[in-house]
Length: 419
Image 1 (cartoon, rainbow, N blue to C red):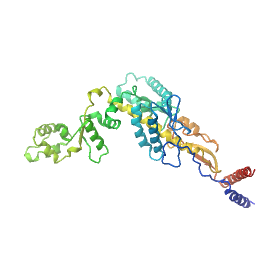
Image 2 (image 1 turned 90 degrees about the vertical axis):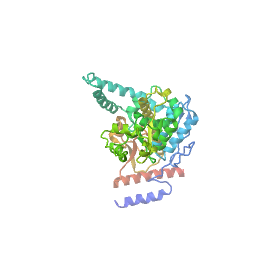
Image 3 (image 1 turned 120 degrees about the horizontal axis):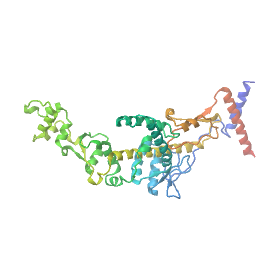
Image 4 (image 1 turned 60 degrees about the horizontal axis):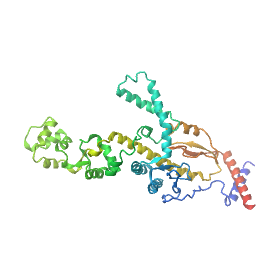
């Protein structure tokens, strides 16, 4: 009898399988049409939706809608196209593409801003409280304060109930520009990508950079030269070019002059700059086209603090990354929420790619077991990386129960069809 019962169950399952699939049903993709084909037949995202307060919902009818402001419909569609394409490419590229749009339009994402408004005060208050617990804080040197401050910031981040695991929370909270229009004229004149490259190297405008032809930034530096933000080759001060060489290299430039070797680099440079044929001599050892030196910004932009601007753009990167990541997670979750799963699934459990960095909110929800028909809606919050894994009993008894459950369901469905 113990052998006969499983055979009966298997035969019954085969009988019904042609009419009702009970062990596994192919995932059903929600047919939500998009303004642009995302290039992925498995994920369809809905059209943008205009809100009554002049915003745009980028992904209505998904598990986590994102609403943007300060842009027109054309720009909203451009953003949506970037996000749709990111579903089949990579999020980093989409993040970089969104940055100039956010900066130039001063775009605001309601869901990201809501997170900042709610949790930034908690973060700052925690840091202030921790400072007050250190008796020697007021008497500490600036270096010691900075060291302590980094510890306090990390503790403040860890104390947050919800925190996006993909995000530099410090940059998101502390680097938000007080005046989002401060860089508008600068971007209009030079372009976002050009200024972004400039900011990577601006800290030492006196330095000469060697950028070979195949270097990823070569075309960028050439564009800076065209814009007047850099000079190139022998347009750079000869003394600055010579400073890039080692003392042995400087001595080799005058090997044919039968002079004693220089022992001090400064003396060698002073002598070499006075030679009438120094460019010819240098041309034998260096490629002048590889040499670039940044110039100061024009006078009308000297009021801009470039250190602050660099931080502001780090904040923009974090906002852009949150939008891209949450849009992607929501698209996949929307696709999967309509799936019909195997009768072997007894429930669901949350999982994360980085359990050590999980926020308390996700950890708390992750400790629960969810019914097969009622999984949690993902993403749980902005920047959430949690996923779902099925819970199934694949023991002989568990499989037998699953078959029995599947047959019962198939028979009920069959009876409904007959009636």
